[in-house]
Length: 347
Image (cartoon, rainbow, N blue to C red; front, side, top):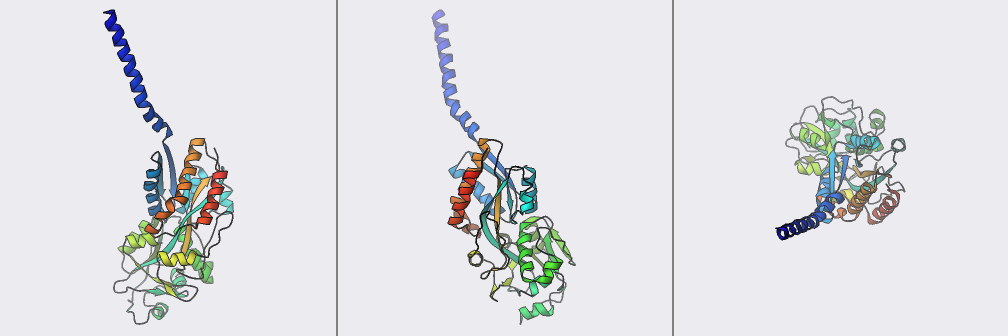
């Protein structure tokens, strides 16, 4: 009996040790698992969703959540410190950066075109000149058969009906890119509306959609409408995109190639903040998008996860940009950004 009890005790002890050894790697994995939460621009949301899926192939322990709430919301959440990183197509201004308690670094991740989308049955190749487009969104042109639109589109049967305008309901970097271009080429638009993430539109027949998806959906179901969305959303929703006249006088349709041509000459300063108003070539309504990360995080685990994420985005992640019709960040700029992030972000 004593012998049996001794054997039993050894078996139980051995089992416990074996169980402990078997479970310890699992507990280690749980301890090492890292989750980072971001929110902001809808412009790059399809790209960031792809990034979040692909990064797990290299780092299974890294989970990235991104909520597309608009650039204005992204900046507000970064300012409040309620997210681990933000997203914005409108680079933070100096006064906004000064409000971020733990400091902030602007990390450019991609570029892209903003499409002027329209729903006009029977009109497949709408052209809008540098004079006409700002006049439309400043409220100076309110009917589809206006003489200025007709002059841009000779021979096209334009309907005699009011233009229905679709704009963003939320603070938006897409709106900033769009209004920044129109303000750069037209003084009246600049004075009446201006470059803004949430301008005060003075337009008749205005419909407002939340995010790029909301604007795309409204244009798709509203005949006689015109709006603006990131190019990927125009493609995804099978929307018609107008050809826009650029600085060289050419009418250019949005595409990855024409956006790359427009952004080819962009120079990035030390803070990586760029406002592309009126490029010399290519499709003229283009912009960049940024991830906003803090200079200081609550602990080493979080700061390490952020650096792992940013390094992957600017090294491995850029290969996915073309697939979704976003431009890449030039490798020399990406390397500069990584030097800044890796040397500055700390717990």
